[in-house]
Length: 343
Ligand SMILES: [Zn+2]
Ligand SMILES: [Zn+2]
Image 1 (spheres, rainbow, N blue to C red):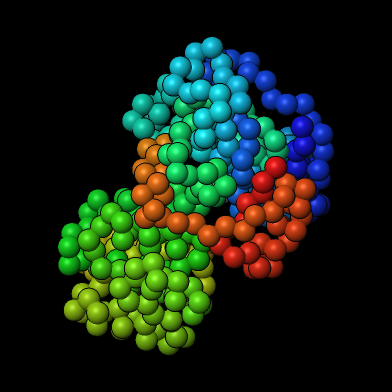
Image 2: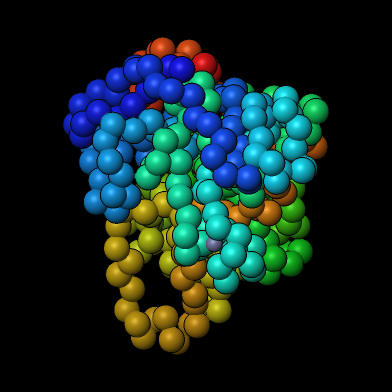
């Protein structure tokens, strides 16, 4: 089968031939890839940023946002049939550890991450296990949802965590209305009665945010006047939840000024340090909450919203062979929505 592999760091990906994956254990599932999302993490992998953390041996096949059709099943898999349309939770988990038993898949003590530390979905077929497979509603196609397997799941996880605590009349600020943010807006509007303020540098992103249901949008200025705008909108108190999809360029230091007393600051984007005086943390009792991908149940819930038409993803399709163009377009900021590779 065709695969697109990392053959060296700071080198281009390479199209190769490789043997198809085979069922070797009773819970194995082989998926015929329908679409694989092209993610900024793929660029970071090529730059070598994950080399040490993942410990992956080269060459290997990347692609961690995968959906397709069931191709082959191990003996013990009773809930799936060849031909089923499916999306894959990005991790392959053990099902036996404490985290798995509490449904907290991301913190599994014996997990693999196809596309990051083992062979992924820039290929015709991918091997996973029954634990990672979610059947799609008949109205959804693999290409419509593949990119929700990571970016969408991450946005869903953070927003759903915030939404558990949000009541009518309370406020949420989202920083960033790009790839993750535009999913986050749709999710919040679908599952929470809270009012939403979206902040982004880009006027087009804000126009989309408004269209997707944001109650207020703000284009930030250098002098932090937007902080006052948020405080004015929230009766001087600040928002119950700030969800930071960016966390770069000083967004946390200003973002935290928009959190109300005892409110929550959800960190989703990463890249900068949080530098907040500890006295401000104890005197206001604000909380900083980390967010890493999402659980199997998070992804299953997100697929319900997708099937209900409440979460839509804009995608640009590329053929698997055109992987280099997809990566280049993503690097140059030329992709509308999310790029996907279709074998
Ligand atoms: Zn990704
Ligand atoms: Zn586990």
